[in-house]
Amino acid sequence: MYIGIAGKTSESSATLHSRIIQKHLSNDADRSTLRQSLGSLLAMEDFCLKPLRKGTRKNKSFWFGEEGEKRLTEWMTVCARVTWIVDEHPWQIEDVAIREYGNLLPLNIKGNKQNTFSTITLTCIRNDLKDEAWRRWRRS
Image 1 (spheres, rainbow, N blue to C red):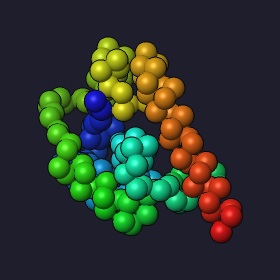
Image 2: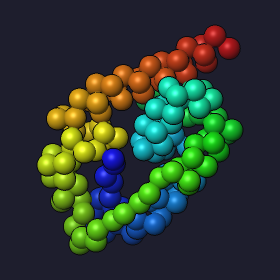
Image 3: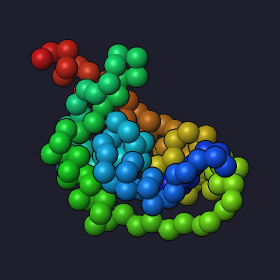
């Protein structure tokens, strides 16, 4: 449902393990587009995830607060599965894979023009939650 790579260049020391653990499972939605997408969809399912402001006005990022992020991590640990392929130049195949298989990758937004769920529905849900987080912040 989602494709991602570890390392954007041959000089990168990132590994898939470090990316999954440090970015997707040990961080928050502000730093992981996968977490932001999953959390946004789960928030729509009354998963008790409320978007909160994080970041500057420029990027209008949001997260789900400590408790919400903890619930999201627990859900991902139980429900998410990871598989991988090894390639010496993953940055060269990521865009191609999204173009070729984007209809099977609803959680990938960037470059996934053929998947209307990701480009319209998921993008709208995420934007609505981002706006909600900033409206809450302005009212407080």
